[in-house]
Length: 315
Image 1 (cartoon, rainbow, N blue to C red):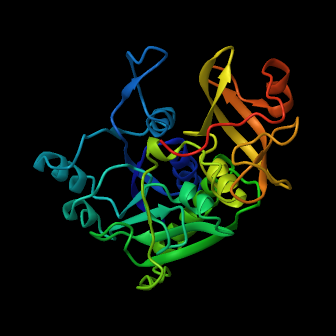
Image 2 (image 1 turned 120 degrees about the vertical axis):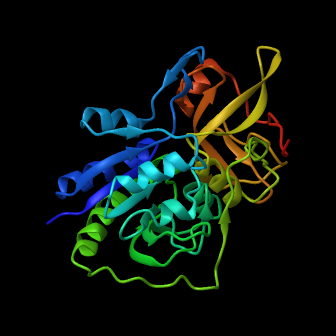
C-alpha cells in the first residue's frame, strides 16, 4: 500500500520532503507550486521555483495557479482524487475547498515548535529572539494560520552562533524525514492528533527591510541574535565611510566579545564593536555588490581603525 499525495511547496526548503515521500513509496498525483517569477541578472527571465524544477526532473505533473478562487482550479484539485495533500512552504493561503479536497485532508510541515512562531518567518524569528531550540512539526491544517492539531514533532537545538541559513538547512532535512514518517503512520491510521495549547502563541511576521539595520545601542546579545537571524538573507547591515562615501556593509557572521565603549565604536583591529552593553566581534562581512568574506579578508581591502564609530540606530 501507499498514499496518493498532492504535494504543495515552492522553495528549496520543500524539495527534500518531496523526494522523501517518493523514496518512502508514496505516489505523487501532482505538484502545486508558485508560478514562475521574473529573475536572472536583469530580472527579465521567468524562473521556475526549485520545487517546479525538481518535479519536472522527477516527471511529475505541475500546476501553478495564482490562487484557488477559480472554481475550475478547485475542481481540478478534487478530481486528482488524492488521499492527502502535503504542504511545505507553499506560499498561498488554502481555502476550505482545498483543505477538504482530499480524503484525509492537508498536512503541513512547519518550521517551529507550535504554537510559538506561527506565520511566515519562524526560522529567523526564533534566532532573533534568542531561542535555544526549535523544530519541525507536522500538523493537520485548518482554516487558521498554523493553528491545526499537531501530529508529529522533531526538536532541533539552536547553537550559539548558528545562522538562519544553517538552521534552515538542518530543519529542511529534519522536516523531510518527519513528513515521510508521518505519512507512513497516516497510511496505517496510526497518526495521532493533538490540539495546540492556547498559551504561548507568538507570530513570526515576515521580515521587513526596515528592521535589517543593526542597532548597536542594543545589548550585544540582541545585536548578535539579530545578525545571525538575518544571515544570509536579507542580511543585517551598518553604514560606514568607504573611499569618502557612505556605503552599506552586510554582516553575515558575529560572536559575542568582551569590551565596552561608546555605542558603535570599533574597539579593536579585528572588528570588536561596542554595543549598549558588552560587544560583538564581526566575523563575516559583505560589501554592496561584493562577495561574502571573512573579517580578516575584509580588513585587507578596507581600513576600519580602532576608534572608528559605526552608525547606530534603525531606519
